[in-house]
Structure formats: structure tokens, C-alpha cells
Amino acid sequence: MMLISGDPAQCGAVMPELETMTGLVVNLGPKPGVAAAYKLFGNLTVIGMMGVVADVVRLAHAVGVAPADAVAKVAARKGLAFGSKESMYVHARGALKPRGRPSP
View 1 (cartoon, one colour):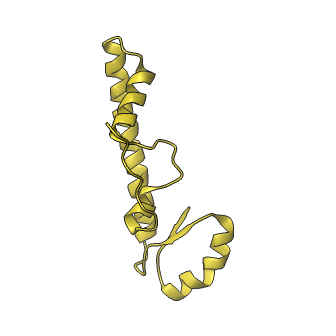
View 2 (cartoon, rainbow, N blue to C red):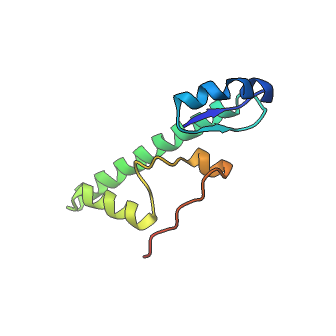
């Protein structure tokens, strides 16, 4: 997936080339810099999630629970899709329908 934003005419002119490079190009509108901001939003989200997972692993280890079990069970219970090809960017722009949550 690739994110773009900026002048509609310029984006339209390069869209065919961009589409050959990736499976999905998401145009985030005419304001320059929005695509870069969304990329940074994603980076910050991943960095934050890594910190949370590290805390879960440390706590699990401290109380004698297998860290892999703690992470997997929490992720499954909260409906998190680690490793998914879908992305928050696409959900935010409405290009994909969000998946349903698993039953409790």
C-alpha cells in the first residue's frame, strides 16, 4: 500500500506508475504532507504497540506466565490483527470495511 496527497492533477498524473509499484494507492486528499503525516501516525502506533507488548511480556515473565501465551491471548481477546495486510490508513479513509470482532 502507498499513501499519497497533494495537487489532484499531479497525483492523477503519477497514479498509473504508482499503481504498478504497489497493490493499493490511497489518495488522502489535496493537502501536501497529509500522506507523510499518516505514515508517521502509523509509525508511532507501531512503536507504541511494541512498548505495550514489551510490558505484557515483562509482566507475564514476572508472574510465571509464558510470554507468548500472554501476548497471543490478549491479542485474540481484543480482536487485534497482528501481521494483517490491512492497515489503519485504509480503514481511516473508508477504503476497506473493518473486520468483525471475534466472539468472546
